[in-house]
Length: 209
Image (tube, helix red, strand yellow):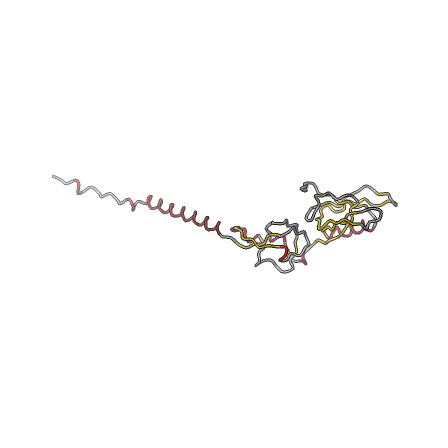
């Protein structure tokens, strides 16, 4: 009698099955991936946040900034840090108080294309206008004593540095507003002031009240 049991192949151990090995590899990869994500999220870096509102053209120094530890991952190079901020750097745009300072919001002073001017507004300044507010500068050219032409936009986008009551204007109290404007607008602005134009400061549309 033939022994059929001797010719029957032995079953392979389950751990030698390719599909089993692939499954194990996927589980290991998944666990490693989760661990990497969690570990990366826990890593923080030291970057700068604005301690107050900083307007374009202002020199940014230690008193204007505070160091915060945040988890930015690959975005950390996009923000200024104690290791990257150059001495004498100036703001190129408004940086709100508490905002992390982007690298492109500060630059060397030599590259700045803005300057500061002080104008007296002929109209009342809204309470919403404060340091960092974006405004339009309107001017009504003087035609004769006490007569003015139709107002027109003199500077389409200026940033307020400060607002202060000014008692030096003849006949009435006024408001002196220090503004940051582009250098290309300086000549027209000075000409309007020197020519006796009525200058008005108007918040741009969308400014928060």
